[in-house]
Structure formats: structure tokens, C-alpha cells
Image (cartoon, rainbow, N blue to C red; front, side, top):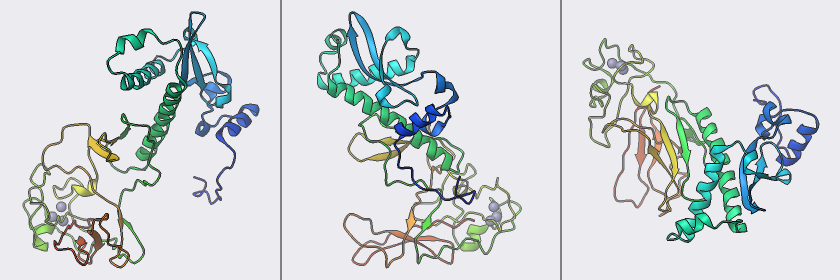
Length: 325
Ligand SMILES: [Zn+2]
Ligand SMILES: [Zn+2]
Ligand SMILES: [Zn+2]
């Protein structure tokens, strides 16, 4: 935002706690650090950190939204109006305990007087992770350019948003890679599905059926209509260019394979889900190694994305997707 206004941005060296204290002192709101008009003068529970029974009264250690952790306080259950956070707290607590002693569910439930420090530490980490993942989810949805919603989910471990992940909507060209932005030719069909459309002119098959499902075998090029075609956005030969039509979920896999993507709805076979985009690097930049797949992409003058093989590879992988803009 600041850059758009022509201002310079520098990272803030003060901690969030310090900024929160300064804001409260000056009676200023700042949603980025959790101080809203609602909690400037009132206390709002951000998450619950710990539990104990004190003189027969159940109490929770509360982290207050927009207040530093040094202001955390023990509160009796009757003071708490946060059923969702309470439910979340117990869910995390039992998940942790059951993982330790899977056969003693009932015993655990009725015998908690206070929490072991390792357990309260886990609950706090889980709460912080949940907040970080929610922020990441909001950021992804701000950046995306397609119609569906993106969800983030980690029910497996304490891992937060990946620090080396950048969400992009289109290929990123590295230096030396030619990225032509405009198509040169288009079609002038009145009916692209039945006419002599772009794919026919290019000597390849029309990629979709009338329901916009792929009907050509894998590995074949897809030539979609582009900005020079006379047809409109409802043309049956415009599918990939419209972006993912579904809501998708980035989730933590439970088999040690890191983050994955899944759909939350049924998708018919051969329907377009999403593009696999990344950074395009030139042949000379690519360092061939066992760990890195030796297929990468160039954008050619024919508006194709073509995967080439590295020296020493026996198979030749080819992937071609029409440049559609
Ligand atoms: Zn056409
Ligand atoms: Zn066309
Ligand atoms: Zn068309």
C-alpha cells in the first residue's frame, strides 16, 4: 500500500508487544497488531493457554487479543464467553493426551487438576499456529485471481505457513526466458465448438467436449482461444485461462510429504482443476540433479509451454499448453 503511494517501507524493529503497549497508551487502534475498537477498552479472548482447578473452581489462563502475553490472566470459566475457543482448547488437550495414552480416554477426562507444562506449551503452539494459518489463508485469498476460495488446514503437526512459498497466479519468468505477452493470431468463428477454430488452424485437436471436459490424451497441446479471437468469454475453448473454478484446500499431509492440495467438492473426471505454475528457468540456469525433475519450460514463439529434457535423460517429456492471452 505504502509503495503504491510512492512511500518508502522499512521493517519495524519493535516487537508486536511493544507496539501494542504504545497503541494502548495513545488509545490508537491497529487491526494488524490486533487492537480493534472493540478490544481497545474491553478484553477479548484471543486463545486459552492453560487450565487448572483452584479451590474447586475451574480456571483458564487467557491470552487477551491485542494485549502482550505478560498481561495473560487466570479467569474462572463463568467469566469466559468464548464457546468456540473452549471447544478448541479441549479438542487440542484431548488430542494430545489420547496420543500419549490411547486406551485411557475416560480416566484422563475425569482426573485433570492442572496441566503438565509440556501440554500447555503444545496448546499455546497450536493456538498460535491456528492464527498464523488463518492469516496465511486470508493472504492467499487476497492474492488469488480465480473464483473459488482457498482453505488452509493442518490437523497433523505444529507446522505453520511455509516460509519459502509464494502464491502466484501466472508463470514467473527468470532472466533470459522469453515471455511473449500477446497472441499474434486468433479465430473469427461464429461457433468455436463447430467452426474452424484456433486448434484446427494450429493442426491439433479441439481439446474439450461440450461440457468443457478434456477429451484429448495427456501430453497433447491445448490451443485455447485468445485476445485476438472474435469469440467472447463463454466460448467453449476458454477453460484454463479462466483459472480454477473450484474451492481448494492446502493441507498438511499425514505421511511426511509436506503440504498438498485437495478439493472439497466432487469434480467430474477430465475437468480442469488448476494450472501448475512456477518459475520458468532457462536451460543454462538449470542445475541437473537427482532431486530436481529435469523437465522445465520455455515459452516459444508458437505460444507453447514446452518441457525439455536435460542431457543424460533417456525419456523425453513434453508438455505443451497454449499461451492464451
Ligand atoms: Zn474459434
Ligand atoms: Zn479462437
Ligand atoms: Zn473461441
